[in-house]
Length: 143
Image (tube, rainbow, N blue to C red; front, side, top):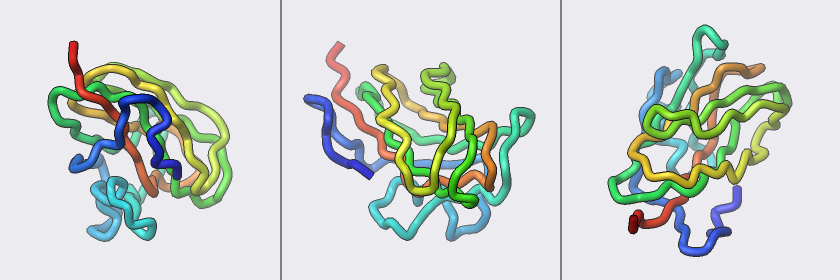
């Protein structure tokens, strides 16, 4: 996944924390999406549906404008139709529907707003909900 700063003044945010609606096991913890270890991932251990979404939350420090996200799905079967909604502080900022592939990045997903909590909610997927990595990019909020 691209970890380059593709927008001026924007940096990948470090030291974030994550939690999730479900975790398959301790080895599949939500925090794994934030590490640089490519062998670690978060796995909910269950599929999602519109009536039973699965989500991962990422906490962002105060004083930051969340610029964009890069999302790397861990998906078996490797190709399928998915639907993901991204919220910042409870407000829908992106509705991603389409065909996704295992280890093919979704993004950059532009957010461009201050916030403290990002929720990536999956409502449709051909597999258990699982992310290899979620990168959060931001800049200081000088407003």
